[in-house]
Length: 229
Image (cartoon, rainbow, N blue to C red; front, side, top):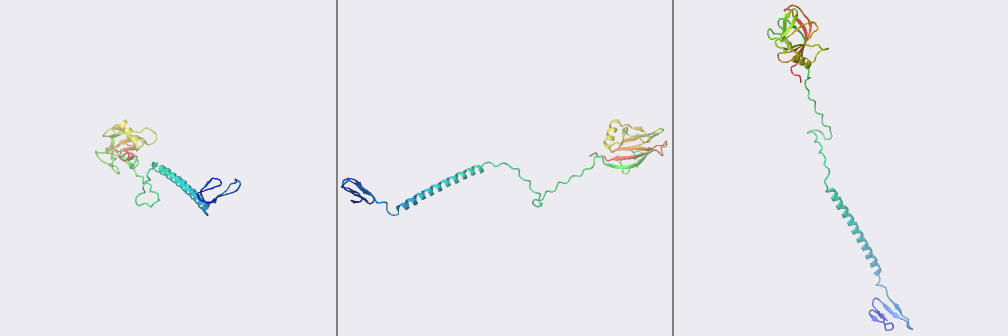
């Protein structure tokens, strides 16, 4: 028997589907079934491949999306702070080194205002002048006595330096402040620190003496500027 949806009279089986057939004798049953329409297997294979491709595409898309989310999360975090680079000076070429700041020039702390020979007699020199000059009645010191010769100042602004070597400006100033007197004995080779009327420090090295108010005493003088820096 052939056909779709018929009941076989010999076996009582109901056949449904494509090309079912039944035949035989002596209670022997032989069933025949036709395959699917021609070309059906190819469509099944194509469908399976398509499903595999779609599945692979979905997996790749999920991986890419996950990676993008992690990257966004990492990049959205606070970035480490960095100190801004100093801007180059105006007008300087890019990449060129900025010029070093010029050092300010300051006056030395022991600037010498004047150095030379002076005479101290009945009238003495005004050491604040450049060069010092004999000024009657207003000199920083004069010859007060001649036997023995003594140097005299208006204020206790004289002091004998008894240490080795020559004193510095600061040493002379400190010596007069601590041990200043109005009169000192003049001896050849004696070193005398003086505080001038205008507050400058000076040092005298006596080179000659006499018993005359006219001849007086000579000395090598160094006068420092008023400012000590």
